[in-house]
Length: 416
Image (cartoon, rainbow, N blue to C red):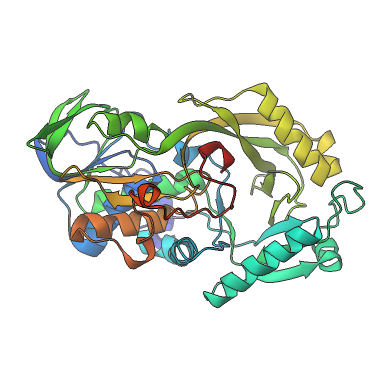
């Protein structure tokens, strides 16, 4: 069923009893051409583009919980392509272009809101760094504007411009950045993939990977063995656990990243704003809640919960940037398990094990990369060659000395 104003009107006349389920609940088949481990945004997007762009439809997506139970439903919904390095900039710009046409593409309202992303700077050194980043963006055809103090004050008068420690001196602004409804992305991709014949199998945990003569032949699951021609891992924070089932050790650590939402407020933050003197980012949802987050908790964990010290750390940074936040009440928080790579950039590559493919290491950038990640991963699986915008995301770059250190802070996961 295609969603449209006419279908809404006609179903309203019938008491809304004519709506079909958005996707099926199929039983797993004994064998698939491709099995994707992970029913989050990246796994579902990969399945969608495999069917839509490459005609590969004998595909199963295996999710151990329900759709949206992982990081796709546990993030702060921000999309942007304001990256500096050649390995990252074209890839995230591809993702931004896919976001811009996504709702029309898969016929689902994902609430794409290009409200703009503003990164504040508080020193001469930060200004110079953002000038360099903005120039790199413009050279790659990405929109970027460097705003001075007065321009930022006109746009965001509620910031603490007179903070003696962290005076706001300006910001780097990407007008095309913004936010997207996170779980709607999962639902839209799931519906689009299912409509093209792909099996989305929930409550199906992978507990083992079967190999023969160095080649993957299938997966052991809580619902029995499922054979496959190709096995694609897209398990985010659990990538290390799943890869270990095949004897593959990854250059990844898993950390908890907490996010928060406040009570509903009248609209006052029109953009996404990030603090330059600490790790804090905030936007306001359509329901009025402030959605914000900060640093990872800083210790290895696979739990979808964090600690109170990080809550205090995020709150301190938020109040330093916007003093009025001290009077706002937190409504709820959640934790996502982040697959932090050694250089802060992702991995989309074949592994040395035949028929085993890897999509991991997304750190803080997983949600915004969802469309491009799915598209490039589908390209790799279908054609066995990397997409041109993802050629730098090789698994062996750490051994070869070709890290993509966007932040320039070193090869250590907790630094990214």
